[in-house]
Structures are given as structure tokens and as C-alpha cells.
Image: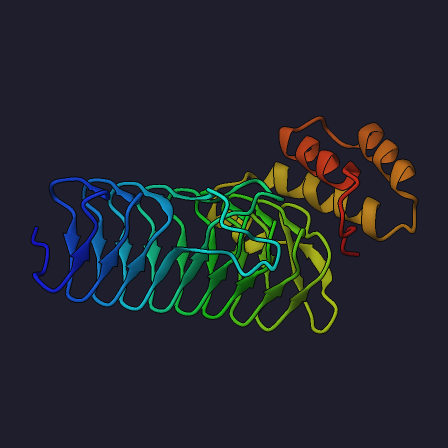
Length: 259
């Protein structure tokens, strides 16, 4: 696969032999790109950025640029992107900060739709979908197979649990638990388990039923956190999915838990 003659590639970048780089793209020193990845035209990749195999990067994307953080002073921080990702037009992914994890990380099989933004120190799990213009502030953890809708703004330090779904045009200022459906602006609210998403991912009827029971106990009975967790442990089956939920809601996060 060719490298277009107008592309500018630093001699200090490391590209697998079959990487394709299209016209007018710029790849800086310290960039590593794995086999089978296609870098479209008019793309900028710089900084200490590692990109895995079989990624498709569409035009006008910027990866690995310095973070939008006023405390950043040129520290050697990173972006790590896994395999089999689709990164659409005008996506921006910024490298980490010394105050944070130092790494902005994107897993495997992630779909970043046009104009979405992944800020410094975010950790994005496998199979995540960010729809058009979804924006992640700094230091956000997004669990695997979560879906974040179009025009959603997620506040820094928020956690978005695995297999959750955030409806479009929402403002996410507090943590979204795993397996849940949430939407709303300016303040997001939970609306129960993400039933369609769970079924699509092969969750059994039994597991979904227990997640629904957990939701009722924790968010509908007016119990305190410790009381609700105790009641869930007493009344529900000890499934791995419920243990993840309990661990998530028991964690003292910086942003608090959506209700």
C-alpha cells in the first residue's frame, strides 16, 4: 500500500511496511503505526503516539497533539490507540498530562464518529462508540461497549460504565453506572437498564432481570447507598455483572453518581 509523495513522514517515525498514508498527511517523530492501518489524506499525527493494526483513519483527523490543559508544560506524555478502530473526519485525540495518567488510551474496535473529541488522560475501552460531535473532557473513563450519543458533552473526571448508553444531546456531569440508559440536558437522568444494548450483546434474560431488580433497589426505593447495596446482596443472585455494579456505585468518585 502506497505512501503518497506529498505526505510528510519524520524519519524518526516507525511505520509497518504495509501502512498506507494518503496525500498531505503529516506524521511526526515518535509516532508508531502498526500493520494494515490506513491514514487518510490531510491528517496530522504527532507526539509520542502509538497506533495499532488495521485502523482506518479518515481525513482531517488530529491525533497526539498537546492537551488543552493550561498546566501542560511539554512533558513527555502519550496517546495509545489499539487495533481495528474507525476514526472518522475531524476527530481529535490529545495526549495525556503529567497531572493525570500521562496516557490517553483508546482500546480495540472503537468507533469515533465525525467531530468527536477525546481529551487528555481519557481511558476509552474496547468497542465504545462516540457518535457525531460527542465530547469527552479530561480524565474520563469509558467502559467497554458503552455508547455515547451525538452532541453529548461529558464533564472531566466522569466515569461511564460498560454497556451503558447515553442519549444524544445530553450533558453528563455525574457518573453513569454500567448497563444503564441515561439521557437529559442540562442534567442527565437514569431511565433504567439499557435493555436493547444488553440483548444485542448477548446478555441472558436472567442477567437482565437481575440488573432490572438492582436498578429498582438502588434507584427507586429511596434507600441510602450502603442500605441499598446490602439489600441487593441479600436479595439478588451473586452474578459477576451485579458485582461490577456494586463496585461501581460503591466507589467514591470525584463527580458523584447519576440518579
